[in-house]
Length: 172
Image (cartoon, rainbow, N blue to C red):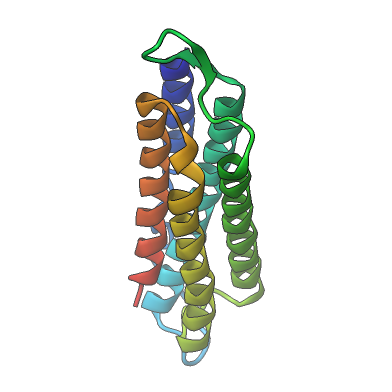
């Protein structure tokens, strides 16, 4: 059941995250804006969309794990991620990632397709915050997952988030 749900969520996440650098050529660029800046802005927008999709999948997975049981080595039924500090920390970190992603996306929508120094610095500030929230999620939230298969599934989603955030930071 858990494996089937994860495969479905992962497939959905991958299907929704198929955006990459979409802008190929732009004509009539404003003075001081380069083709590369427009392409980087577009890539950042697409990667923020990927982060949003992955965070949505991660949130649904974590909430699902709070309602899912498994049989431990002693033959007892346990909740995979029970209510408590780890579950609360996981939800807080996921909420923080979501909040920062939305702020970054809203900011980019307010600047006209420009990945200049100030735009890049502002978005990078949001991304650094996302990376810190990911670290908090790993250190405080997901450690409460009691099933190794479920832990691996969540870790894969977290790895995807980290990689996507790093791609935005690597835009120059």
